[in-house]
Length: 221
Image (tube, rainbow, N blue to C red):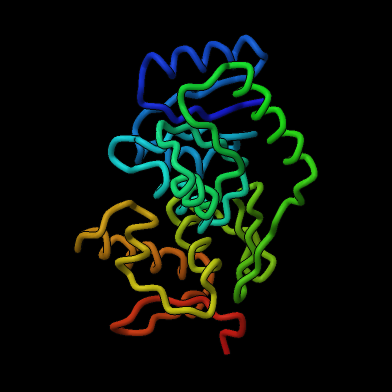
């Protein structure tokens, strides 16, 4: 099983990754928030171990974006923050379990294995919005039952609109979710991305509310 370890402390990352590999897991390690967000959403992992204090983008924001995009991968949060309010914030953001530092490796492995056992009984989810159908496990999209090739960013854009179907999403919000940026060039990139998706699907597949944002409607008519 492949695990993503999102930890920016080299000593902890080395120790935990070594223990996981000794237990038979394949482990990818990253300590940069934006990279973790990208690979966590576009790579198929059995589980993710996520530190909250990450550079570039904090773990709580990453977790919220993953869940808003429909990512169902089990997430075990590792953090030096131990107050009950911070734990509540983590669970509200979509954490499956929470392990404060310092911790024993035996407990980490036990909690990880428990997450993986529970995940075996979690049904794979699909999502339909308008004429789009999303296979969230395979990260694939169909339009009118026809497969559509999308880039990871295009997938995130469609998935975010699908998760908020019926609601107008401002371009700046889409830019923040898809690219992690909120500047004019990011908004322009969203406009270009929507145009590409329309060319692959239909001119009205993603509707524009001029001056407000974009929307997927269950009934485009």
